[in-house]
Each structure stands twice: as structure tokens, then as C-alpha cells.
Length: 414
Image 1 (cartoon, rainbow, N blue to C red):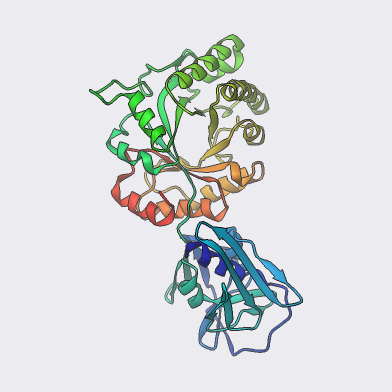
Image 2: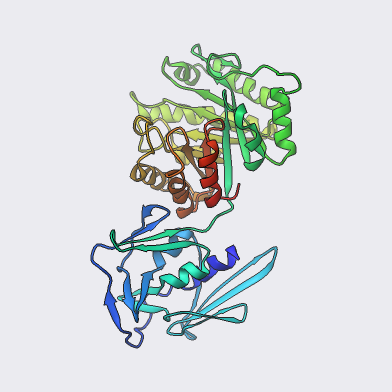
């Protein structure tokens, strides 16, 4: 049903630019109307209108935001959407000007036929709510159309570091888990015995190795996460000392292989706040390329975790790094003091800047539940869905809590 309703939405949307329809009793919606998709404004070319008592909304923008393609038959004036899945094929056909939608041959009635207003196709908001698997509402006081996108099955990466064991039971609900048990220390050396990211001690039968093994056995891909900042130039030492760099890379790959990890998550932050940004980017590219070659030879995946392009650190060449890694995580948080939800406009900008350099299929949106709460988290997930990103990465287990988890479960399959 979820797939079917998405297709119905998509099929009802992409018909702008078609010939004008017979006139319908039309009344403009109140001025200053906004459309919110997953809690964030959605640009639209034509404001909602009321036709024969039915609220009509422009759906091309929504279709694009949901990433749903359709096929338009100009001669037949029909819109067709077809998909296949475990339950079989689903075919949806709508005809411009007709109140009858066909779903696998069965007729579904529309209150008002799809209409063209100033080159934009409009469809009943009520039909959307009934058929498309999304919650819709109209707030008269704020003049706002609110749409919550259907729940989506997407890639989910969870971060697991010190203090995360309280939520170890959530590991099977993620596609992958990055275990933050190693770092590059202040001398530039790779270590599992630092003061903030270290290899945990065993507790009876529960060992770090058993947690990793259980994750893999349950279908969750375990990654060894390697963290560092550059506060004391520890990363700079590794970028400039090629012998130290090779030793570091060899140690990372050896540990990941020996301990049963299936991938490496590289979280090296703090590069490029000052100095020659291009030089720093070039040096980091060399580091990641060497690591990528050695990791792939060992059968390991590589995820590179990066500060956002609209943040303070400019030492990261997204385009080149994407060519070397399986995917990139945009850490779209800590824009302010993390005392509350991250500003949506900054997260949105961070995604759009990344998309200028990297295909959406390789981008994962990082979300910090240290900043977010049950009210705000799905708005961030909604942006990942809107732009068709590969998935989301949650920092971190141990901080999520049941209220946030419950809300996340409404937006994405976990």
C-alpha cells in the first residue's frame, strides 16, 4: 500500500504545461499560504486554490521532493506510474480532466479532476490524504498546508561510542553501526587507548568483539570508526609525515580486519579552518586514497564522515572523497551551541552544497540526537527523504531515548 500510494501521488503530479481544462468554480486560497513538507517549507509555483469546495494543491514540487517519476502520454492525456515489488506490480493511471483514477484496473474517484492552473497541475489535498500514505492537514489560522511524507525504507547508520551500551539492543534496527573505539591521538599515532575513544573492557561474556560479531550476525554491518580532531595538529602531522601516515593506515586496516569489522568509518575533523585550504584538501585526498586502496584489498567498505560545506572547516574535497569512498556522511550539526535543534535552513543548505559535488546516492545525512528532540528529529529525516539521499546517520546510541525513537520510527523503517 505504501508503494501504491506513492505512485498515486506521483502519477497525479507531473502534468504541468498541458492544455487548459474546462473552467471550474475556483477561489484563490488566502494570501500568504505556505506548504510544509515534513515540517519545512516546500517551494511551490502556484498557491493552493479552492475548486468546488475542494482544496487543490500543486504537486509537481511534492513529486520532486518525494523523488517519484511518472510517464506522460500527450496523445492520450494520461499519466502512468508503474512499479514492481514483492507483492507484484502496481500500475496507476490518471487522465487529465477525469475524476476517475485507475489503480491496477480498479477505479478510484477524485473529488475534483486534476487541473492545470497557470502551467501547474493541481490535485485535491483530500485525495492526497486518503490515498497517498501521508498525513495532510490545513491550518486556517496560520494558512498552512502540512504534509508528512510516507514512511520510507532507507539506509540507516548508527554511531556507537562510549556510553552507548544502554541502547545496544537497538543495533539490529540499523543497516550499519560505526563503533567509535579508536582515534588518532595528539602525537598523530593511531590508538585504541585514548581518553575519549577507546577499546572497551570486557564485562563477563559481553566483549567488544562479541558486540561486533552479533551485529554482523544480525544483518547490521559493523564499521570501525576512527576519530580525530586537529586541535593539537595531530591530523596535520599525519598529513605531512608520509611514513607516519602509512603506519596509521596499515594499523587501521589491520585492526578492522582482525576484529571482524566489515568497514571503516573515517571521522577526521578540524581540517582547513585556517591556512591553505586547497593544500589541506589535497593532502587529505592522498590519505583517503591510500586508505581506500588498502581497505578494498582487505574486503572492507569505507565511509568518510565530513563536516558540512557550510561549516567552519574547509579542508574537505567532497567530490574527490566521494570517488574514493562508498559513501559520505554530512555532519550537518553543531552549527550553533547544540543546546537545541539545528537550524533547518543550515541543514538544508549543507545538503544542497554537497549535492553540487556528489550524487545523492552516496550522501548520508548526519543527525545528532544530542541536539534534536522528538519534535524536531523527523524534520531532519524529512530533508534526507526530500533530496533522495542514501540515508541517515544518527549520533549516537545511548542518547536517542524512547520518545525520539518512537518519532523516528514513524518516518523511516528501523
